[in-house]
Image (cartoon, rainbow, N blue to C red; front, side, top):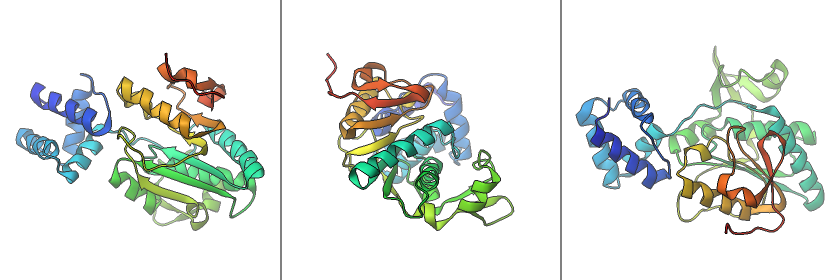
Length: 269
């Protein structure tokens, strides 16, 4: 188990590096993850903390892997992808192209699910869409760019989708095919940073299983900035367990945790 000093140092780093708020129940989880990442014993953990506090980039990335959850999969909450594809089709009809953003994409399943949904909805191999997929964990983005997944990640896919959009590369592994890869761009982005290398407007933003981990002020700031990057009719898609909270005045709630941008953006009183 982490000592109180180690846990408090990790909490400060999590908030500083990623805007993530850790509480006491995370202490044992961090210890187990540390063991899986090869951070062994008290001295090993202290060495990692020392390096991260000193600004070492690789140590910071290891802290990010320690404090972030990577559980994901293809087509979680399918109705959200249907709504995103429908909104993108309307946007492309109106303006010639639709732009989507998967924020906190982890290992890429969400972004590729969007790509597959768009291919199916548009019935074109080259639909007029772009998908930006970002995360603060470079190791996760490397996995996403490789596009190879095990059976667990693909368990929600029916055989027809798997056969059309994936190629089996091993006994229990499949790689995403070139067509859905074509219009997904991966990039590093820390939502808690002061500046984002992202330019709007977007027609759809997915930000699922991200807000729940952020400290409240960071959560509000992220949602405020995302609202400003959405088109007036754009959609923000959250996990059904999440809610805009203090930023709810910036959005209009719809079914399936899908929010429309409020017509007139107002700062919180």
